[in-house]
Image 1 (cartoon, rainbow, N blue to C red):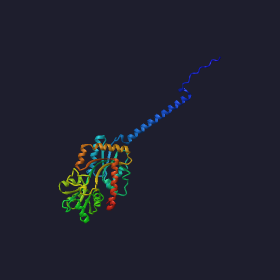
Image 2: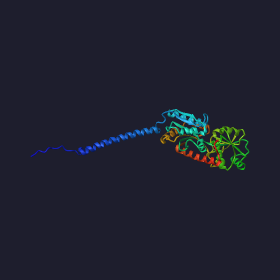
Image 3: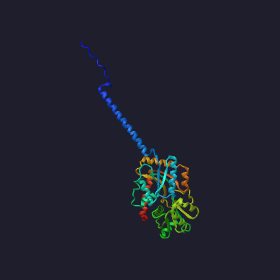
Image 4: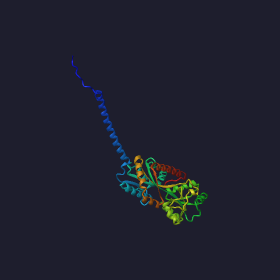
Length: 350
């Protein structure tokens, strides 16, 4: 009788088929682990590029106005606070000319890395509507990051004006389009369009006298050489308080704490007239959404600084944060509004 050779028992997990499957699983697991590691590294790299590590070098605030203007002062004040909080310099670069177009274009064409930003004001919407052939699209090539502050528009009159109060002034203008004059900071300026919007709503007409800056226009209201002008709280408050001009009306839902003696347009029957001057930050449209949010968050935090609040309040400007989407919606609405005013009033750029 032949002795049978005893074969070692084959464990189910050690069969040739199972061993091959195990090797396949092992290779597959290693491949998946490699892919997961690559994905994690890519996510970390994307997070860094989209704003997590921002800022790692100096940031430029390009301002479309000269040094000493309120927009310039506001940009420097915000930049100083951001420098303190974030540990990187925020440097203001003044790039003036052509209604802010040069500054806007520079930012629109900058790298979308968060290191070149535009600090501007509501003239952005005015120039976007006024100039037809821009080297950039104001709604597609730049992105609203955050609104920082806003201020009402203030209508002032010369002290010797016979018509007293908003309704009497507008009644005079309706009766005789040549009876009254108004000054502005220039043809197509924010003050010019704000006044034309008022006249369109009121169904009245006046003669426009353009100046080189709103301050010059207000000075001629003081000098009795022009009847009316629209400015900001900052450009009119001192003269109203000194009695050198009359504060006729201001925009906003209620009276302004800086000028409590001046009634609102709404109080005097013009509830739909609400031109407001704003200040805010925009960036190139290619700036990733996540980084836009990071920058907006940093700005919002900086706005808590008491020194910043005091600076704005001294100029009659209120800190008023809006995030990117809300701010962008406001800008779009304003561009459409100013486009309509320009067409109806037949306004052209100088």
